[in-house]
Amino acid sequence: MALSTTGPLHAFLAGTGRDGRGRLVTDVLAFTDDRLEEVHDYIQWLFPLPTRSAAQPGAPVLTQAEIDAIRADRTAQDTLERATERMLRFYRDTRWWLTGYDHNHLRITRIIHSLRILIGPDEARRFHEAILALNEVAGSPVNARSRTYWSDAAGA
Image (cartoon, rainbow, N blue to C red; front, side, top):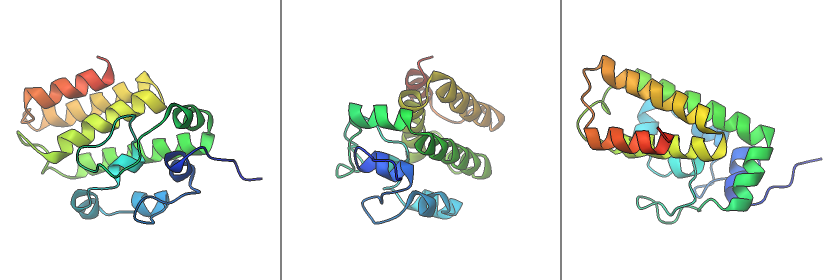
């Protein structure tokens, strides 16, 4: 019997629903690095937040009911873990975000914040520390303001 989902974000992360463009989560996770860079409307679905996105105001907003359902759903949790690993691989394999200012800095803040809400502070800190390590190896080109947002999102 299929698990009942509580909303569009939960359904997407559980693998039973589609995002605003009709994509399944498996479609998004299969994006190439270039596609992850070029497409700007998937991150709000992979790593949702309870606040409206300024970049994609039409994206759904995470509700408390969906937070509770995603936390309790092993499939959704597995999806979040796979999405986290995919984004870490993207950041490890690309370098264009390692600059003073880049739209990926906002994505990173979102990912950390979403992980903290949906999986927990340990996973958020793990992602945060991995990103900081990549920045450090590159000579710390990311601006202090972005790094502060990342730390705040991780609860550091």
